[in-house]
Amino acid sequence: MRPYIFLLLFLFACKKNDRFKDEQLSPVNVAISSENGIVNIPGADEYTKATDDITIPVKLVFSAATPKLFTVNIGVNNDTINTLIANQQLKNTVLLGESYYTLPRSAEIRFGLDTFSIPLKVSMQAIERYYGHDLALAIRLSDATKANTLDGSGRMAIVLIHTDKVISGTEIHYLYFTKAGSILMEPDGTDHTLGNTEVTLPVSVTLGGTAGGAFTINLSAAPDTAQALIDNGTLTGSTLLASGTDYTLPATVNFPANTNVAKFNLTVKTASITKNVNNKPVLAIQLNDPTRHLLDSSKSTIVLELDPSKLIETDITNQNIKYTTQYENTSNGNENSPKLIDNNINSKFLLGNFSTVWAMLEFATPQTTGAYTMTSANDAPDRDPKDWTIEGSNNGTDWIVLDKRVDQNFGSRFLTVKYTFSNQEAYKFYRLYVTATHGSSLWQQAEWRLIKRP
Image 1: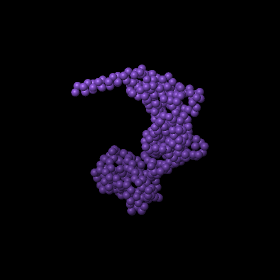
Image 2: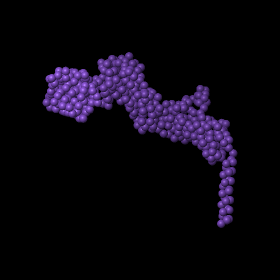
Image 3: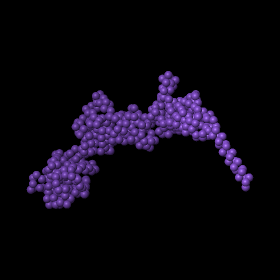
Image 4: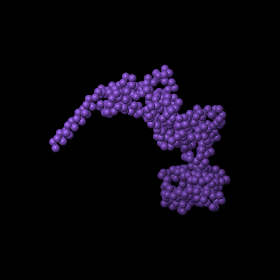
């Protein structure tokens, strides 16, 4: 057995000595692989193209296999590019700005390599934005460790990206307002929301293509655009709304990944629409500075003209009506049936010996409505209405239930709660029919208001 053991020890010693010899190899000279200092993209070096960026492998070459692990710092030299552009030595070329690329600050080179690739990732936004121009970046190496040296002429190279060879014009992903190009009449559809104090209008932005990753776009008001249309007569009789005073915009639009449409909400104060009911209010919005992709300059601004008749809710409770109730408070004129619709929450209609009660509005002509408010009175929450229906009729006899509420609670006194319901039919008669209180034999209510929705 001893000869075999001796042979194994000999072989082990030889291998150890071989490794030792490797570690004693001379330091290497490091250079960026290029043709006369230029790395052309597309060109000899391959690159990887994705939806949002391209990745360029900037190749380092060594004079021999690296004897041990070492590092080298990586930087850029913008002054070189700017000088070459100014001297017309790089024609039709734009400096690749730092916001458009990522580049490691150093590279760790492992033992035994003869080449190594540094990943330069360039945003597709830069390629789209400067389409038709070349993008240039000068990459410079410094401070190679472990006594390795940098090649005098190869320590810096210019990466030159030929944008019109990376993508075609049809591949550019433009961002634009979905319905830009003409004055948009709002509301445009039924997806807006009418509130007590404000109106919410959705606005959409389209990307020509599908977003690879999420990104944002800045929003701003563009009052000069809207005012110019008013001044030149395109928007005759319109009134310009003021950003922040009459309406509010989000600062940015968040564009989700894997989609081509994003939406944001424009919020307009109802009071601002009401005071301009005879002059259609207008505003303009502008897209700015997307973090990815390119704006379509012809469709990056949109002008909205609001139609008050479709955005303002109208209280029709006391408009040309005949008013009757099932019962009357004959003992106290200060708490009788007219108090229910006097538009004063500090008065109330009170009834004793409650079982049910209805209040009916008869209009001169049929009306379409889809909302109403109920206001609690001053005392005794157990007298508040709990269950009720809103009903419509065209003859005062045959009733259609339009809205039904059960187990309703008013959290405080003099509280007005708005209720909405879906209704497209016009009725001559509307009635509130209360069928239960919160336990009291008395019923009270400060106000019932019927609201016409656009």
